[in-house]
Image (tube, rainbow, N blue to C red; front, side, top):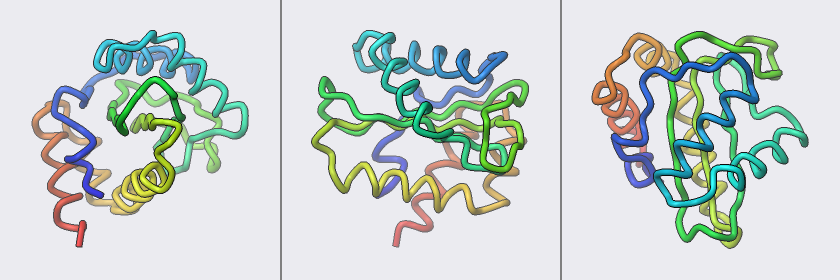
Length: 154
């Protein structure tokens, strides 16, 4: 699975202002709701429910909030680079500045896990993370996200 299949340039947010974990979740739920035509509250509730199970702050300044929604028919991804790192209750207690939102249909099954695995492989590459943190341009961020995924898809 390639991030370019899940993420368009319009779904890359180069500078997101947020003061807390809850604020980040509200902001990305709002953006996603507009993009896919869903009530942002429904998205926010799913994300908040998932966070109650355990933080999606996976370490190294990265969070992958995710959830399943009956009302969508494809996997949806959004990437946001935060202006200022925030506490996300991450497993390593480091503040988060890179956020990957992943929403999947309730029937997605293995595709949801494949998308999470693809993001996980991407974030293990320290050079990629440096490039994502070093750019504030949507096109540059999108290029890093999709070129890296394309070069490692095999």
